[in-house]
Image 1 (cartoon, protein in one colour):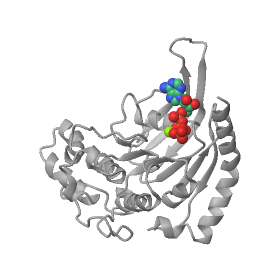
Image 2 (image 1 turned 120 degrees about the vertical axis):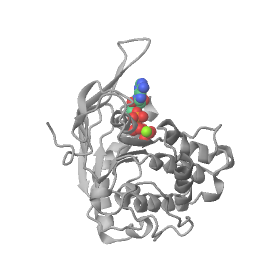
Image 3 (image 1 turned 180 degrees about the horizontal axis):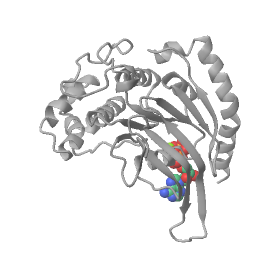
Image 4 (image 1 turned 90 degrees about the vertical axis):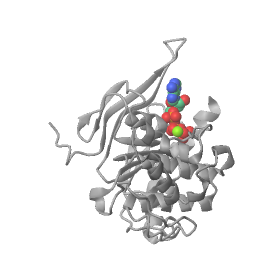
Length: 298
Ligand SMILES: Nc1ncnc2c1ncn2[C@@H]1O[C@H](COP(=O)(O)OP(=O)(O)OP(=O)(O)O)[C@@H](O)[C@H]1O
Ligand SMILES: [Mg+2]
């Protein structure tokens, strides 16, 4: 039996996912094949790959929303059956409940869990993502960036051990995106109250939430999906490159040995970042072209 204290946070072992057409069982599409992927406790891993290659599919498998056709998933050493309750999921698409206010959205998961202090914790997390004054707004009254912040607060308020993020900021303008990326890194590193790189965000730390306290020990494990290589390198400890589909699989894995804490905008100009970018892009480029051509031909 694997020791849960030393086991990786997440292990996908030889995972394949084949989708079968509901109306014609002979129509099958294997999105990913034989994918083995590990995220250590406290590790920040990004997966990059061309559009349609199976990134969201893998995240759905990790979340327990999709059972793989073959292969297995372990969470802190234990086989995953059903929903991954140790993980919080930030979806690619907007996923706030339009009939609930920002605070209502952040509180929702806490309420489901019966937390008596759901309101206080929800308010604290909204302050932490810079939305202290916006709790009573409905999603349609918030900007795109504010909605993403609300989603972030919603995910982190539940204090998950694993955070699954599926291109969470791809719809944002570059400045907001970089602020959010820095914010995520600061929260992940447990130094959100220092606000080194995110001047527009509220400095109030949350009360009561048991967020990470610095050092890998207390950190969340993050599996971050993006098709933006710059973002992947700037954020991560490790970048995994997926091939174009069908039957996508990891074709490269790179350790990002850039110092932390990082400012995602500043780090891009360092020679080491540029060298890593060149090395990873050399693997990714052909796959991106293949993926794009496949979508054009479909
Ligand atoms: N439920 C499903 N039924 C049938 N095919 C599916 C299903 N989900 C995904 N696919 C197919 O599997 C492939 C991978 O999809 P997925 O959403 O994982 O790609 P992705 O890498 O996240 O793409 P993007 O970067 O555009 O978000 C695509 O070809 C998609 O059409
Ligand atoms: Mg996707």
